[in-house]
Image 1: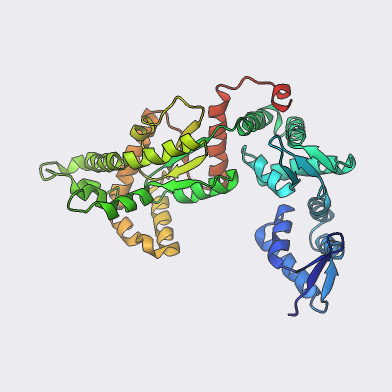
Image 2 (image 1 turned 180 degrees about the horizontal axis):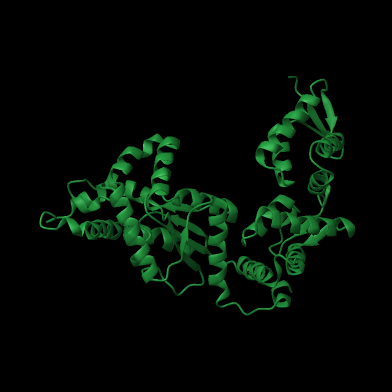
Length: 397
């Protein structure tokens, strides 16, 4: 296919037509990825005989295609998100000026636990308000307050969800750091969820206890600290005097080995967290070694929100499938070895969940990724709500 250029007359620019960009816009309009990609591919084929098209002409073609293939409603969604409020400048309290982004604001709304459909509905109303009032310039406070009002007025959401938005906006403006500690046994999805949260919250600093352990292994030989060179679920094998322990003590052995490894990693783990606290930056710290003994050592005299979360997979077959899948996606993770030690992994999860229950650490069952991210964010906001007593007027003044 010949290259097709898309011209923006207002900006005097020409860029190549990219199916990926159009696919993303169509997803923002509510289409599933496969549907969006198919529409983008159809549009590209329609443009096969052309070399230049304007942005307005391209948008109109997409709208007509959506009307014919899907419905007027879907076409209206695409038209709304692709044209509304594109020129609205937003002033922030720190002096920054940005252009209003419907996609970015939708993701911010999803941070408080809204689904894609719910956040899209609020953003559509917000865009329409900006267009109807011909607002070419506004403030981030005004955008946040409008969002609060629309959440409050939406029957399916209402005061409870609007309150979550209020709490979260106040936290963001406070400049307080968020320290998210994501624990769980091997294969339960910690790194996947941590990555999704980092993207959702725009947190750039992340760390894993596995990486800290690898660094320490390069510095300290196996002969000096054999426990460090074992996996978390098999660290008990390197403990002294195990021969006299009975077979029925297996879960206790697994727990003892794990706690010995946690203790070895505690200094490095605390250093990572304390640096984030000192620099007042948010951090997502994930790993099997996230344990209450480590959390208790974190200084509690600052204004950071320290939120430990324990992930769980409650069915043996589900956890096995996750481990098998991890080996398929990343062969270097050696899924066969994990499966050979599955009983110890399961026993370690039992211990971790019992500890989390004992210390009142929130336990979240990891099933659907997006749902888990929403549950974690609702948990975080619930923690913030305990000491929150401001009104909407005070937050948005």
